[in-house]
Image (cartoon, rainbow, N blue to C red; front, side):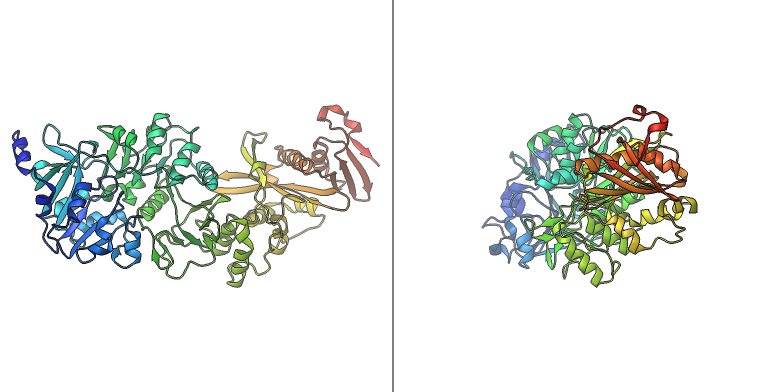
Length: 636
């Protein structure tokens, strides 16, 4: 590898036909993938005068055409897909091509051990540098391992291929034949935006803190997530691949990698599929390093980044949390890819979040992606034990450490509303949930996310006031059993010892229009905790709603009751409810004071140990200082 490498380079230069002539019938061929597919060499493989037969071609997803999978080449080639792309999918479905389900992190080891054999490596490389080294350009992934074991290495040298940074290079002396071409790299089209994509991206973005390290896949959701993170700072990237959205986020100053534990300041990936502008940006860009898949996708490497957020998609998920990502029933569609590698890596990261994000429906809204059971033949890519966050346009739920009954209810709550009654009925039939679980209203309500409000209590602790969800039953149960007997008596007018499911679910299964339950929640570590609860139920005959509330003993006196009451009043007004009515024990002066802070004059009527109250909303609003202390309670 001395200075005269240029002379040896010239001797290795040849045309496509002669280069392909180095391949023997029966040889197993590795083809570099994605945007680094050697297009000239591929054309040579299928040329009429190529003396090939019974050759095996294996690779990950490639952009552009895959002519060797056409039926007329069936006797000459058989393709083996490590990840099924659109250009080879029909050949796999027709049985003219194979699919190997495998974690991408394990492929380099399988290649080096000859478990997966290659005799020839066809790769696309950047022009050599001053020392005679080429890079693998936009796709490192499996190329180093394939070149280590191949008997023959044929490289397509393309000046359009960016010289990328990282540990993997190949010297011209290691290459047996060089073919120079000059052609644009195939580009990954921008995905079509669907109406639900922006909402999914917004919900995913809510889970991502400043300084997080992200793994992003292919499709519309990753780029939209980056758009939704425009107010975040110092994000990092450690990913199997990335596309145009990452470059744009770097240019907007969102991605710096400053807080990464591993490779701070660097974007780490294995391959890039994007557009021309991103390929040009990659050229000799020291911020981006491309590494082999056994490094980028190693869960133990991934976990070294704190706040590692892995964002993946799937085709189906059943009510127990089994995730199918590579097939539609018996029909193979894509591949395992790096999903499990990154889900497990993020799960082991300090503060990490593994996320599976998907639209709630498929086939133009005709099928639910959340199903009672996976389709016959569907493969489980991410197991029940690995799944954590699941996000659709209807919400985000964390299934990790949650029992099957709670998982089923959580997933039903983020399914498309038109499929929820069916999912609930199926879940009951298969004993996944309570047999007496309340059916949703005839009109399926959407969770009113716009009613969520953030605030602080008097001690400065952050709190979220939000409408209740059917999945909050266990949180409400926990709150009840933390209450003192005195607080329970003041709220329920009796000494309740138990709060069974049949009672709790009535507070959780509401239509959000006529009735409303609000909770105050806090997050302690990764665990959400409900510390307050307010509700009203509308009497349609009078137009008034009966209101009540309760606050955890440990949080009383911090203004939570007042905050709940005022928010409940605002929502009731917006729904044209005429006012509130209620019953309060005469000794429960704290609750009386909270009602007085709703913003309207309160009419009171004492009867024995209880006081009946009425708050008409058609009377003029007042503030706390509008009335002297002795006139706040108007008795009727």
